[in-house]
Image (cartoon, one colour):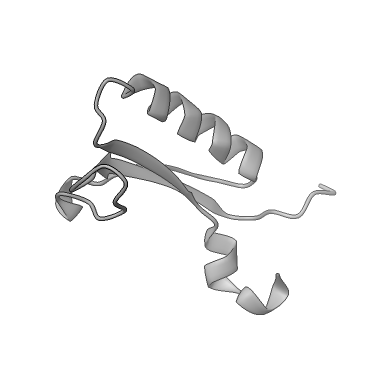
Length: 74
């Protein structure tokens, strides 16, 4: 495999307020999945975000976990 694996995690849930990044209930945060590329994570993020478009407080995020695991390599 020629492409370097970069871990991306997609999570989401209901926020306390629009524009906030604080979840209403951390126990209810949904783990969507872990992905080896940003493009895969973005596809999963988009599908979840579009499925909850009617709830203004629902948000999904892509976390660049590879940056957290080894920040010196970025």
